[in-house]
Picture 1 (tube, rainbow, N blue to C red):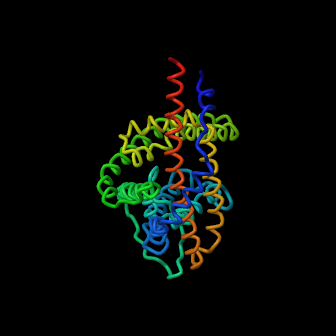
Picture 2: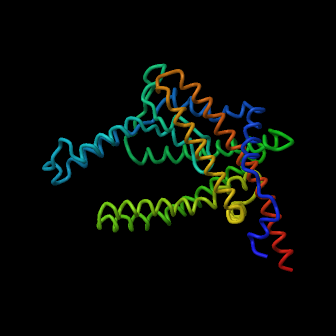
Picture 3: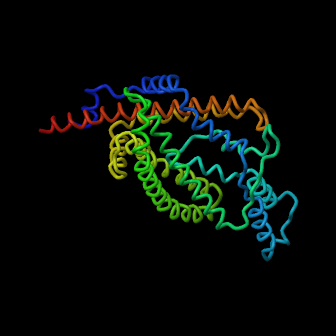
Length: 332
């Protein structure tokens, strides 16, 4: 019997059941939205780490290059790029690195990168060197992974019948955080292994015209999504099952293989809910207190979706184990 026939004998995990159960968990443990709400309030009302001086220095260096002075400065592409880089330097807040990937506390404010707050202009801290900015970014990202591990662990515990057990959560937090950091390093290595040759290929294709360059960018993006999809549940294996990194990766790939239709549909629904509501959450102005309601709503939805992912992972893992067992029995 092949994989498809075996899968048809057992009902696959229910997408709607996982989503409903996830939001029911958060409704019963509303305090869990403290994590995303606190991060968003800090990024919105707290101090900023900016790169304005570094960006200005970069633009001045580019302007001093031989031949740049002879290029037109009015409405050309160079002028547009300078304005874009100035905007990035003013808005980008390196504290946004606290929203780490693949395990991190979700944030609405990092998609806004506000310049103003209802309390007035926030305090700024500028960086003088790129090395200093990079070191701070790496430190904040590591801190974000550690805090994100605690957030994931608390949400995962809330989905269990026994509820949250803080002694158990805090005892396994350091080990899980270390495994999450190792998983992140593994994903970074994989990303560079694909991105570096891919970017070289895109540059080569761009020589043949803008259309070929755009096709290359879309192909590289599709390849990265195709590689990332089977690894999406690796953090869940580390946190929910206490699995080592490689075991969690292997189980995630196996789940994606056997439950591909329902898993891909689940992620599609999650993305549509999250991104669709983010349009609503970003409607208030960055200096309006109405953004508080948006931050609370965003925290509830993202935490509910995270809880549903742990419920779906649990149900899908049981389903895959039964399918694999049936395949083995039929093969005897």
